[in-house]
Image (cartoon, rainbow, N blue to C red; front, side):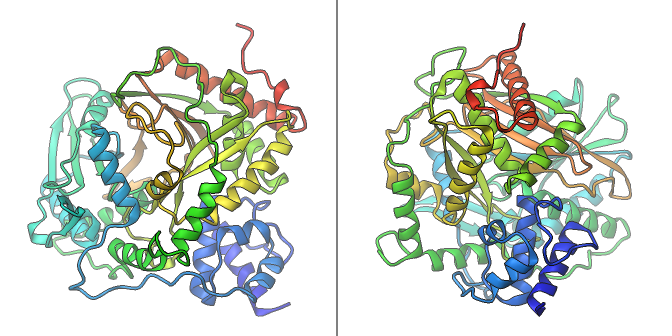
Amino acid sequence: VTAYEEIVCQVFAAVLDRSDVTADADFFALGGHSLLSLRVVARLRALLGVDVGVRDLFEAPTPAALAARLTTQTGRRPAVTRRGPDAPPVLSHFQRGLWLIEQVYQTRGAYNVPLAVHVSDRLDLDVLRAAVRDLVARHEVLRTLVRSSDDGPDPVLLAPEDAAVDVAEVQAAGPVADLLAELTAQPFDLATQIPLRVRMITGEQVDGCVLLLVCHHIAADEWSFAPLLRDLDTAYRARAAGRAPDWEPLPAQYSDYAATLHDWLGEATDPASPLRRQLDYWQHALQDLPDELDLPTDRPRPATASHRGGLARAELPPELVEAVRRLAAQHGVTVFMVVQAAVAVLLHRLGAGDDIPLGSPVADRADEAVHDTVGFFLNTLVLRVNLSGNPTFADLLDRVRAVDLEAFARADAPFDAVVDTVKPPRAVSRHPLFQTMVSYQRRPSDVDRLFGAATRLVEVPLDTAKFDLEFAFIEDGHGGAHIALNYAADLFDHDSAEQLVARLRTVLEHACADPCRPVAGVEVVSGA
């Protein structure tokens, strides 16, 4: 009917890789999810110059409805633009909060983010070193140190030639999985080391090699894996051919994003600032939050968390993955919201009560300029699930959707500022406001051939933990999925963690089979 509708149809089709998107087609019914919704938002912002958010897409999921809404939108947040080459580095609120956590809790590598790739041929170490230097030169955040000062964290941007790149070959004498965990857990000194190290693992047990990239979370998030791999592959192929990589300059660096966000948010002391308005919402939304969930732990909580952890996982059969997607589409929610509701039901049925606060990472990449930029674009939200009154799972999805959309609309307020505003009782033995995290992750799918060889992703086992429990629903990019549970070894044995993962799968099965069943009827204890 309008040019807006046509453009929105085209954007839906491009993001979903379909050709049959009509004006009345529902984005989520066609297979859309939260990560793809960010792509839609970014493209519409770039194409139409309007300020549109994920919430708009949820509330108006067809091209006709969304186009009608876009014609009345007014700008709320400025676009990220490249600052001058001499502009000083700026830390985002999210980076400052993570730096503070590192200082207070001494997390011994718990905030390291690994990415491991098996390569069918052994890489040339000298070529790899040159390619990593190119990667670090391209992404400023990878050569930014964070030093302490009287005013807090102080970023120092190194020149490309001064950034010491830690690249080495390591021989695997034992199981590769054990070596991956050991190398990943080694902490960074953010004041003296750039937040990236690279290891090429070889040995008799390795066919070819395993390439391990470890970033500190202060410089990269899971979304960064795709541009990291893509740029490293481009640089490696170029250096192997005896030339420098020929790539377009990035539209914006992470520091540009951080400066834009800081200037727009304003100060918490200004009652008219976006930051103050968002903090006022969180103060109300998290009022009387439980200090700590009563989880079925194997041991009492220690006085100080060791941050030792482990990983349990459960594969999900394809029919269950498809059923979860179908349930989400039928109820106008995302797969993440289905998993979030299922985790809340699991903890509720195991005795955690009716008021279940769950942490969730939310990516702030709606601006097209930062889509291919490596950086820490994650904030943490507290999503409060209310299970009072014995709702059905379908009713619970409605509650979750309402809470999440309100939260996503206030996702700019940094988590540490929310904590300072809510002022929960603090303890070094537990995470403030929530102790259980839930996330939805999608692994890069175009990793079958990198560096001129056959490649595949390798899962890295974890022996650290940031939270009591961290449930992740992980799609492999080829239609499959599994649940991974990173657990605190201070509190849980591995067998107990495996039981929790199996029980979550049971909850998902019950929810998909009969979403109208009251949650009190969802059985989480097996016959055995």
